[in-house]
Image 1 (cartoon, rainbow, N blue to C red):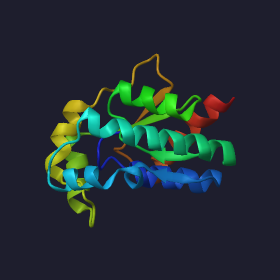
Image 2: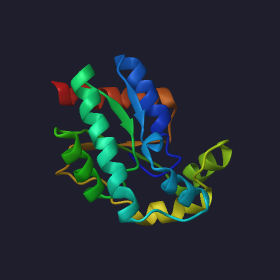
Image 3: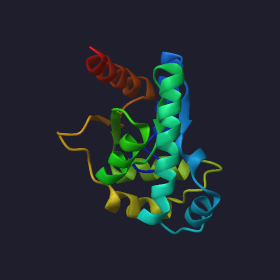
Image 4: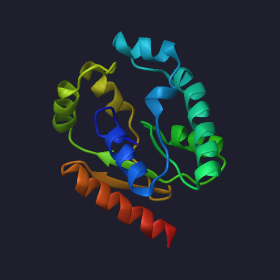
Length: 163
């Protein structure tokens, strides 16, 4: 989880490969209207997000039931969004908050090609972000390191949760 450009898709896909389980990119579950709204430079509202979170949460449930585990990339910016995903999944969801400075993330977003989320929406995402709380099933990982280091840290968090 985290704001656009923090590396959710790259980390999620790498973790899915590591564990040989599916990776679900939350971007693929957005209704067309949401994608067009973001492409036009307009931030999503809670009303835009609820149906998307329900769909993605259902896919998490199905993926976990079929494969034992599944990874997904989702902004999950607010606690209420994380709660909605967990409720829709019907079981505990471990959220890994990929956290970094605005400058680092803006640089990554500017370097992306063929992505609908404009860098102009980064500030609205940062303003919406509610960092994970100590009472959530979550961990925070700094993205100011290599993809391999981020994944190694995430694998350590997962292993500790599995123990």
